[in-house]
Image 1: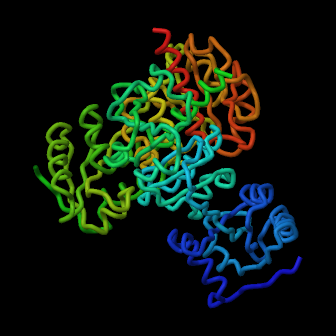
Image 2 (image 1 turned 90 degrees about the vertical axis):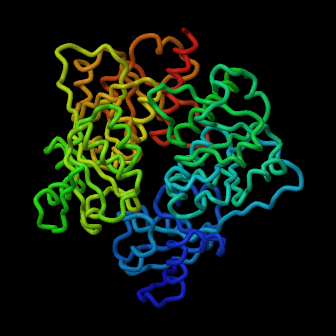
Image 3 (image 1 turned 30 degrees about the horizontal axis):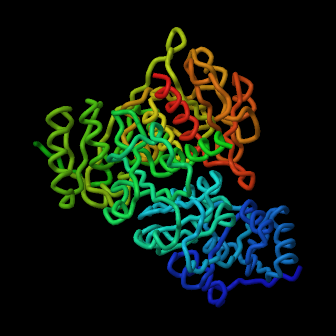
Length: 268
Length: 268
């Protein structure tokens, strides 16, 4: 494979990657993000993702990383760049990585003309990047591939969220900047609010899993916003011990989405 | 309330707190840790925790924080210190907090003479502090109050894990440095391994929830160690979509522990 060396911080490509690594807004604007590591690279190869450039860390990428770089370059036609260690470390989203990072195009789906007939997960103001990535991973693992996020939610394509998602992004369809009211035109499913403050008992109430659903999860601390609750068709409460206030949003979503999956598997 | 000012980095108390903030090992050795914020402080007041000192940030603690400091001083008899902002920020585990932090004693339970007749959660090498704290919170919310952790697991009393636990620590009984083989003498319950690599279908297998259980969860990436699997009585698999490799350990624990809770609530 052909490899171009980059050793100056004044290099235009380096400056562009640095911007992507620092700002979720820059990622959105550019329609691209950065991904680090063997696992994400393998997932992208499998999915035929839009890999735009391969970055390797000079003299320190592992053999496995180098082999993957070659394959990505061959399969995706992406140019390969060898960055001086200080430059690589400035753009890489992980501290001690394998020395392989990718610039990858973000797949922004068009808003559909009529509501999508699929299950979905809606994130209302989830700002922690680790939580956001884990939520996407949990949803895809539970069979829910459509993810929508409110404007206040972390940018789901930022390098940190991508990393926490462990590749689940590439099996998902992700809509960002979705206001709660937009959910009506985006998805056909019933909007089910997970709310620690009240609602029907998730386990004791029946029937909600039969049609398409849009599970709505709120931010750490405040939970779902008033606006989100207003568009909900029903509210559900996970019956936790009285001594506890609430679950982490990632744990709450795992409970709701896998209760849905359990019921549907049992009904087959 | 009486308040002592600390403005020098050479102050012995400050140096001690700085050590606690930087090193989980120092926390273990001292039998104390640091906790930040209104929520943790309220939980500690409710539980009558061993609060040893109250720290407030000079000229910047919120009114709510000051009121809580007074209450903690009165109820727990803890001395109150006002730290110069730079000193406070050096020991506080959060970036933009409310200006209230506590030094709190760690409750290390004795190893019991005979196995404990209670449900438990075992963490085998979970190193991410956010995951570890969320796991404690999820367990306590599901009614599982006994937590045990292998030596390779993050120190469960470190300030970061305490923060992610959102107060659940104070409703839990926490055993650290527990080797997998020690589980036999520590808990009477059946040891159930959550294993993404294989085992019985969690949802389709019945009966496991009837007796006491010790759910065993492994590290991100490798999963449960060979040693942990050897002491397991049974292995269970969460049926996820084929396209996904595994769930985040926090999500996996939420699914297992709340499936247990669901079945027990239904059997009442």
